[in-house]
Length: 199
Ligand code: FE
Image (cartoon, rainbow, N blue to C red):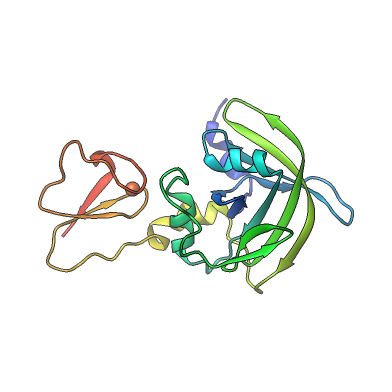
């Protein structure tokens, strides 16, 4: 390929996919049929707990994140695993057709899984929409916008007068003059090479 980044030019959105008692941030969502209950496809990483939850429950909800989404939603659902944390704790949730969705979204849709396609890294779930509503009159956030602005969106405020190390992946702050060589971010699990110092 002349440029492997060519797929970055595909327009994708920002969603939280929920199923059972967990969820994660996803971007690869598309409507793939018409009609009153259109089919929607979503790709979910195989290693994510949410992948198992969708398979186990046979239903999922997609909460569409808007331009003014609370960044905490992205942190809570995008930067940590449901294996380590209860992602629903503290989340503002609604429920439709037996599936939780986020009240902080601009819209939600609930789907029943009708087909799955496995590839090397992801499972492509195809779901029939059975419920859904628009919650807010706000434009959806695109994945490209998020990537371009994530430093501002996720900006972390640290306490003045203290040396802080900020995880560039999830925004977790470690206070101390030096960061131990074997340090592991307690939220997202990365090492010290992905922390940046802030004074
Ligand atoms: Fe982190």
